[in-house]
Length: 326
Ligand code: PBG
Figure 1 (tube, rainbow, N blue to C red):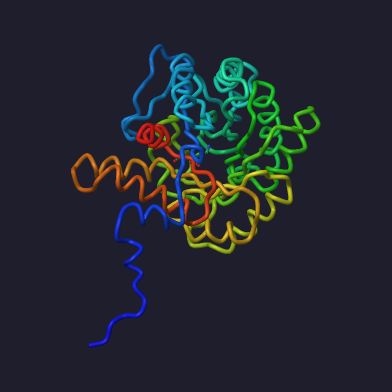
Figure 2 (cartoon, rainbow, N blue to C red):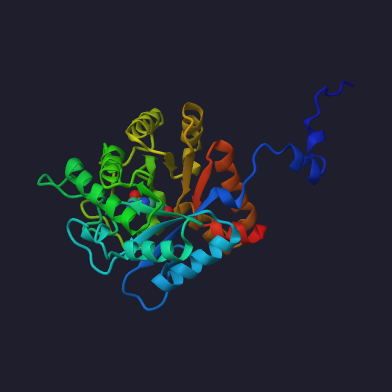
């Protein structure tokens, strides 16, 4: 009888040993909570396809951020749901837009104690649901859209954002925003670029959360990346870093762990990954049926995103995770 020489199982024998040799750790300070704030509502509204997540009023948003802050969460990213939408999404840069009001409130209440991030896009604000201005050919006009992104960045920084996060996948968006922020004196406002963002079916529940229905075929294949492509993401990230991105983000997370690992290996900038609405809701729905273990699956997902190379994870599980550690 021969015996194996190597016995990796020695290191799996006890919980203490497993903790000691664990290669990855997940902490509350790695997580950013996405939060929705809606104009013109009296009380917070549940989002059916995103269980446990709410469309907040300005008041309930402040309370939620206070809870997250006390639990040790270091960042929140805001998405606005305006009362009115128009062709060009002007609510995105209006000085009294819903996100601007929220940023001003939160900045005066929390100061620099939590990183206030603003998602920078116009799809929540346009009547057609696209991430930019529609040109005469019916397609999203890249360069016309850069102008409104620049305006939105300055408006969000003025309102109190520490960081803006362009998510529209227009070419040149990071450079346009960096230039506009610097010209307006906001040279210390950071940019987290959604650099590698795929045209994913996993954003479904999010679109319910922000009341978006996309006109003209209902998709964003003309500007978001094709899920079949991997190498293209390195080009997207390189260009965003060149244009001044401080943090680069990959989205969604789990179906794109190869991309997260590639970006981690190729660049030294902080890497963020967005565990998106569909990824969260799949766990909620299956757990509700008793088909999977909610807590174990959520931990496995978040831990795997970290293992793949993400430093920062945007996740609807942020509060739950922080509470389980508290
Ligand atoms: C665009 C944006 C989207 C998400 C974040 N920013 C939707 C989209 O690209 O259609 C999706 C996030 C999620 O699914 O949780 N403003």
